[in-house]
Length: 82
Image (cartoon, rainbow, N blue to C red; front, side, top):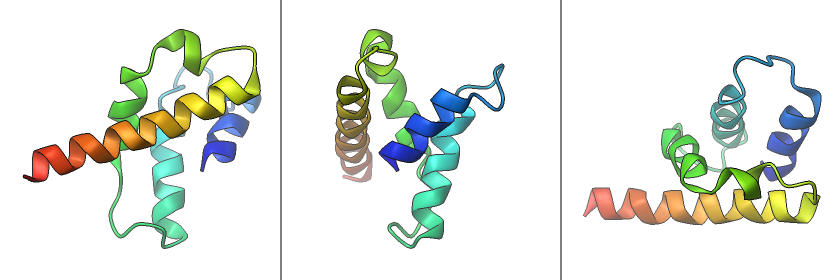
């Protein structure tokens, strides 16, 4: 999923809708049966990660930011569920 989002930002198929990539990555996780439901919290969690980390020149930093967003989204989802 992190690599798919990285590819989305590298290719930029819809330049005026960069947020759509995160939703498509969440759909990819659902399609590959890694999760049962769509993950809009992933898109919301990505917004919480500073833009400098999400758009860093270093690929490792960008992938790390995505993984941090996944952890943040999961924690927020559990908090909302409780």
